[in-house]
Image (tube, rainbow, N blue to C red; front, side):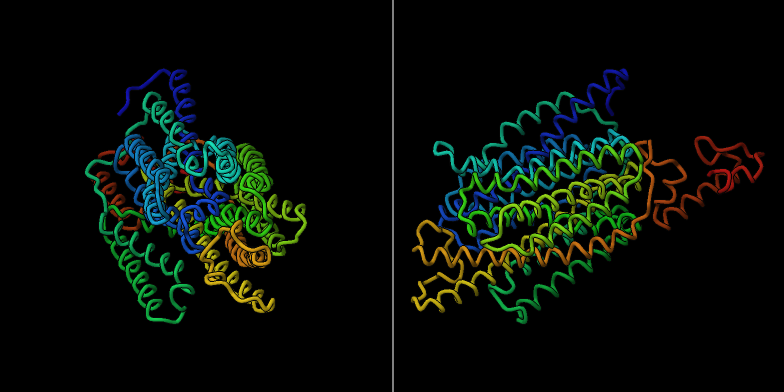
Length: 558
């Protein structure tokens, strides 16, 4: 446990710690999207395919998603500061390896390792902030967090494009650029971050449950990635992977319901607030990841822009997210209410997706920009506020598991989104290119219709036109699918309780008891009853034995 500090010194230390935490969050979010507009050049330079294009993104999201709940639970059991430092070092090493990759296979493998560091850093930053600041104060801070995430997530394509187009830097610096910032954050946090140890003695990690969750999720995500391409929807591979994944997750639920300290406490994720926030976060995750990844590809492969120009064209998405998260965060902190801003954000998100579902290779850029702006506003108003709803409803000692759960499902939505939308894109592009070549009467070049190359510069002019039209039409189809998912998220969010944010970092005693599983609550009640019989107080501020019974009634507690 850290040594208590004077109030003014402690406040200054917290502010400095927040700077380091925001640097870590920004760099890890940046690494997820900085390669989006550079991917055509990266995959083309390494002689990769459309399938490998998707995997450069999916591998990172897969590793990040599968490990997020484990990192979140570890934060409840071990030193949060040490875990964050380990994740930063892991991220730095993986980033350097990605920058020196010599082929797409190496790049995909190193990106998976980078995903482990990303998942850990992102959830640990949110857990640590939750341990430093109360939910109501965090509403205002969420505006800043949302702005950082917006600049990193949507500004990543611009930075990546600029690095790729700079002759003396190149695409490898998309992986190197974050290393110096993470080193600075490592030093700042080592000197300024001081946390009160809120761990419970005698805790242990549920390794069996963690393994089953990671294996089950990974199996289903691998199926989503390969189905329709490497094998058919109705095939023995589909049956094996789907049944295998569901079996593993069923076993995980069984294990989690029986162990004393589960990775994902079921009593948390089945609570009304948490369950609804998780389902809505899936839609937001698809918006955050899918929008940045495939819009960058659209501007390059369908419209013919350079990486830098493609990054600049995604600016409305960044501005919408940054502005909305800042304003909504300030208003949430002032009012203490979250639901109105989440609902408004999801409505705007749905409208933005619907507008983008109409685009093709000839759509006027102002129309595309308005659609991106609406998507950005929707993400900014809903993303961090959904996390805040969950954190507001759990006690401090379960903050890591709760934050890890909602981050896990948001990342899962993003991973599924990239995988499914990537599969739809590849299938539609292949069909459209084949149809275009057939109608032109030109012999079909080998590999032209299966996305085996993304090197537009090396294509004949007639083939390049066909490819651009195919990518333009396919991108609109992607966002039509995303519109349907956003509608589901909006419908679920209507059932979100209209909660008030608390002013304290931890839950009051009476509310903490309500968050316990039924068995633990019964045990606590039995212990209290036994102590009362012995004449001992039942809590820190329990009444004396001769206190009238009405003073302990539910009415008096409220």
